[in-house]
Length: 490
Image (cartoon, rainbow, N blue to C red; front, side, top):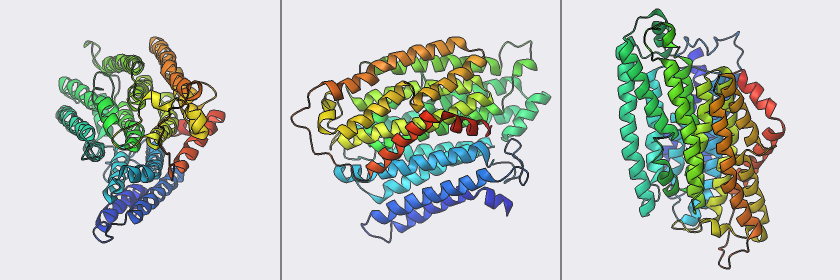
């Protein structure tokens, strides 16, 4: 019974997804029941995760030693429950932002909301995984729903192209992931991550298979997080997907991939301490990840400079933010992991909020996505312009916005881990990003509005905008509340 209670969030989200899918058959053409059921499912699941997060460790074993739930295949509480709440919040904000958007695009179908539930279920399985097989199931459940959602506008060439690119490259990355897991099993004889760690400590492994397997696993995860040089899919996929889904994939999807990185990093020790005569090990893998993080930050921000489409600009910006988040993996310590948790939370508010405004202004067939279409927005829609400016300032990392503190905590973690050079690259990248973030604000406030600006309807998106803006302001004023809480999770 204890196991069922501790796994209640996973049971709830999976059960509600199945119920919602079955209800589609019986409710006819009505979309609202499935939308409200999906919102109820996500809120209920988040509350159950909050409950498992609050259970004292004196009653149950800490997730640092997760050996009491389903034959050590799943962990519970602590950081897994925290990220569950983040994923559910992302789902709620996306659904609220989608209703009006899908209506104006004439693509509102019930399956859309069910797919979001399954995507969140996949993300939650990732955060609860203590077994490479469970990790793979979670990643692929999330990825398959993203392939479908990216091509949701099935009669739009750009959307179909984005889905096809994502599917083909995603399947290729899955091959790396599966082969890496197979080699890790061949090296250690187990898929249990905590047992893999103990076997490495005992030296009871096939060293070559272990290193190659870890390398392939990191390649697969680097693709999921859109890190250089595995980023090539992201701009086209993000541009062709429905705009609320772009925000969802670039925040919750990225956070889920980072959780997978954390799970692997927490269970990989420095192999050089056991095999000093061999000049490669997890420290070398960490250095490789550091170079990838630096290259990801520079490439994402530099290429974003020349984009004329706001949606594509934020897509390349999302690649750069993956580099910032990878700094926490490079640090590979509780401070770095807590920094990822903090930044993933505030990035959720910043990015989804920005894409919601893009979705409000966007019209059918991907119109009104250029920077010039935002000219004079402050004169016609001052509230939207003010909120967009808030999101841009926070993404740029300008104090006292929450984005500044997110970068600060990751930078400090990297410096303390001995990666000052990587922090310098991150600071330079942040300075570069200010050009295009503030450039959009200049278009909104210092240019004259276009004559053919279409009618703008906000609908339920206003709830997402209010929550996102309040989240940025609150954690910008009280960042210590979240970072202190996150530090206790690892």
